Image (tube, rainbow, N blue to C red; front, side, top):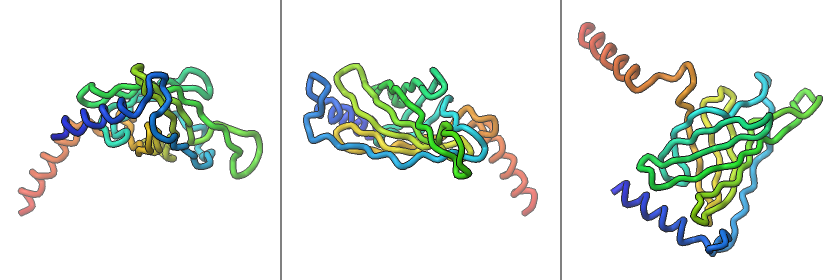
Length: 174
Protein backbone atom coordinates (compact mmCIF):
# COMPACT_ATOMS: atom_id res chain seq x y z
CA UNK A 1 0.00 0.00 0.00
CA UNK A 2 2.79 2.43 0.94
CA UNK A 3 4.60 1.61 -2.31
CA UNK A 4 1.42 2.34 -4.27
CA UNK A 5 1.05 5.72 -2.53
CA UNK A 6 4.66 6.62 -3.35
CA UNK A 7 4.14 5.71 -7.01
CA UNK A 8 0.95 7.81 -7.05
CA UNK A 9 2.85 10.77 -5.56
CA UNK A 10 5.64 10.37 -8.12
CA UNK A 11 3.10 10.32 -10.95
CA UNK A 12 1.35 13.38 -9.51
CA UNK A 13 4.68 15.20 -9.32
CA UNK A 14 5.61 14.22 -12.86
CA UNK A 15 2.13 15.00 -14.22
CA UNK A 16 2.12 18.44 -12.64
CA UNK A 17 5.08 19.63 -14.71
CA UNK A 18 5.25 20.87 -18.28
CA UNK A 19 8.15 19.63 -20.45
CA UNK A 20 9.98 22.96 -20.03
CA UNK A 21 10.00 22.49 -16.26
CA UNK A 22 7.24 25.03 -15.56
CA UNK A 23 4.45 23.82 -13.36
CA UNK A 24 1.16 23.07 -15.09
CA UNK A 25 -0.77 24.46 -12.11
CA UNK A 26 -0.48 27.84 -10.47
CA UNK A 27 2.90 28.38 -8.87
CA UNK A 28 2.83 28.31 -5.09
CA UNK A 29 5.45 30.62 -3.62
CA UNK A 30 7.33 29.34 -0.63
CA UNK A 31 7.86 32.15 1.84
CA UNK A 32 10.55 31.20 4.34
CA UNK A 33 10.53 32.53 7.88
CA UNK A 34 13.35 34.80 9.05
CA UNK A 35 16.62 33.04 9.82
CA UNK A 36 18.09 33.11 13.32
CA UNK A 37 21.73 32.99 14.42
CA UNK A 38 22.12 30.63 17.37
CA UNK A 39 24.48 31.68 20.21
CA UNK A 40 26.28 28.32 19.78
CA UNK A 41 27.59 29.48 16.39
CA UNK A 42 26.88 28.96 12.72
CA UNK A 43 24.48 26.14 11.83
CA UNK A 44 25.92 23.29 9.77
CA UNK A 45 23.46 21.46 7.52
CA UNK A 46 25.93 18.90 6.14
CA UNK A 47 25.34 15.25 6.97
CA UNK A 48 22.92 12.40 6.44
CA UNK A 49 19.27 12.86 7.38
CA UNK A 50 16.25 10.51 7.28
CA UNK A 51 12.64 11.61 7.13
CA UNK A 52 9.93 12.78 4.76
CA UNK A 53 9.74 15.09 1.80
CA UNK A 54 6.12 15.83 0.88
CA UNK A 55 5.03 12.54 2.51
CA UNK A 56 7.70 10.40 0.82
CA UNK A 57 10.09 8.69 3.28
CA UNK A 58 13.76 8.66 2.38
CA UNK A 59 17.31 9.86 2.96
CA UNK A 60 18.63 13.37 2.42
CA UNK A 61 22.40 13.72 2.12
CA UNK A 62 23.82 17.25 2.31
CA UNK A 63 27.41 18.24 1.49
CA UNK A 64 29.00 21.66 2.02
CA UNK A 65 30.27 23.27 -1.19
CA UNK A 66 31.30 26.68 0.17
CA UNK A 67 30.76 28.74 3.31
CA UNK A 68 27.10 29.38 2.41
CA UNK A 69 26.39 26.74 -0.27
CA UNK A 70 25.37 23.10 -0.01
CA UNK A 71 24.53 20.25 -2.38
CA UNK A 72 21.65 17.98 -1.35
CA UNK A 73 20.46 14.64 -2.70
CA UNK A 74 17.14 13.03 -1.69
CA UNK A 75 16.41 9.38 -2.43
CA UNK A 76 13.16 7.74 -1.37
CA UNK A 77 13.33 4.50 0.57
CA UNK A 78 12.20 2.51 -2.47
CA UNK A 79 14.40 4.52 -4.88
CA UNK A 80 11.47 5.71 -7.02
CA UNK A 81 11.73 9.38 -6.05
CA UNK A 82 15.08 11.15 -6.42
CA UNK A 83 16.03 14.79 -6.68
CA UNK A 84 19.00 17.08 -6.11
CA UNK A 85 19.03 20.45 -4.37
CA UNK A 86 21.14 23.57 -4.57
CA UNK A 87 20.95 25.03 -1.06
CA UNK A 88 21.97 28.54 0.01
CA UNK A 89 22.41 29.38 3.69
CA UNK A 90 20.84 32.72 4.58
CA UNK A 91 22.81 35.18 6.68
CA UNK A 92 21.21 37.04 9.59
CA UNK A 93 22.21 39.53 12.26
CA UNK A 94 22.71 38.00 15.73
CA UNK A 95 20.36 39.22 18.49
CA UNK A 96 23.21 41.07 20.15
CA UNK A 97 23.97 42.86 16.87
CA UNK A 98 27.14 42.93 14.83
CA UNK A 99 28.04 41.45 11.48
CA UNK A 100 25.68 39.11 9.68
CA UNK A 101 26.44 35.39 10.20
CA UNK A 102 25.16 32.13 8.68
CA UNK A 103 21.71 31.42 10.14
CA UNK A 104 19.61 28.33 10.82
CA UNK A 105 17.84 28.77 7.45
CA UNK A 106 18.64 27.54 3.96
CA UNK A 107 16.59 28.14 0.85
CA UNK A 108 16.87 25.73 -2.05
CA UNK A 109 15.95 24.92 -5.62
CA UNK A 110 15.47 21.27 -6.55
CA UNK A 111 15.17 19.28 -9.75
CA UNK A 112 14.65 15.61 -10.50
CA UNK A 113 16.22 15.44 -13.97
CA UNK A 114 12.84 14.57 -15.53
CA UNK A 115 11.36 18.06 -15.74
CA UNK A 116 10.26 18.34 -12.12
CA UNK A 117 11.62 21.35 -10.29
CA UNK A 118 10.71 23.66 -7.47
CA UNK A 119 11.98 25.43 -4.39
CA UNK A 120 11.68 25.51 -0.66
CA UNK A 121 13.36 26.20 2.64
CA UNK A 122 14.69 24.25 5.61
CA UNK A 123 15.33 25.30 9.21
CA UNK A 124 17.77 23.42 11.45
CA UNK A 125 17.15 23.21 15.19
CA UNK A 126 19.58 24.55 17.81
CA UNK A 127 20.98 21.06 18.52
CA UNK A 128 21.63 20.46 14.78
CA UNK A 129 19.66 17.21 15.05
CA UNK A 130 16.49 17.96 13.04
CA UNK A 131 15.38 19.80 9.91
CA UNK A 132 11.92 21.11 9.13
CA UNK A 133 10.61 23.16 6.25
CA UNK A 134 8.53 23.23 3.09
CA UNK A 135 9.03 22.08 -0.48
CA UNK A 136 7.18 23.42 -3.53
CA UNK A 137 6.26 20.82 -6.16
CA UNK A 138 3.02 22.23 -7.62
CA UNK A 139 1.63 22.54 -4.12
CA UNK A 140 3.33 22.74 -0.77
CA UNK A 141 4.64 19.75 1.13
CA UNK A 142 6.34 19.41 4.49
CA UNK A 143 9.98 18.48 4.97
CA UNK A 144 10.89 16.78 8.25
CA UNK A 145 14.23 15.05 8.82
CA UNK A 146 16.42 13.87 11.70
CA UNK A 147 20.20 13.52 11.57
CA UNK A 148 21.54 9.97 11.40
CA UNK A 149 25.24 10.77 11.62
CA UNK A 150 25.30 12.74 14.90
CA UNK A 151 27.64 11.29 17.54
CA UNK A 152 24.91 11.12 20.20
CA UNK A 153 22.30 9.36 18.02
CA UNK A 154 21.73 5.67 18.81
CA UNK A 155 21.86 3.23 15.93
CA UNK A 156 18.88 0.85 15.63
CA UNK A 157 21.07 -2.01 16.91
CA UNK A 158 22.03 0.04 19.99
CA UNK A 159 18.39 0.95 20.64
CA UNK A 160 17.35 -2.70 20.32
CA UNK A 161 20.10 -3.83 22.71
CA UNK A 162 19.11 -1.11 25.17
CA UNK A 163 15.46 -2.22 24.94
CA UNK A 164 16.44 -5.85 25.60
CA UNK A 165 18.53 -4.78 28.59
CA UNK A 166 15.63 -2.70 29.96
CA UNK A 167 13.26 -5.66 29.52
CA UNK A 168 15.70 -7.87 31.48
CA UNK A 169 15.90 -5.31 34.29
CA UNK A 170 12.10 -5.06 34.39
CA UNK A 171 11.83 -8.85 34.61
CA UNK A 172 14.38 -8.98 37.45
CA UNK A 173 12.54 -6.25 39.36
CA UNK A 174 9.22 -8.14 39.31
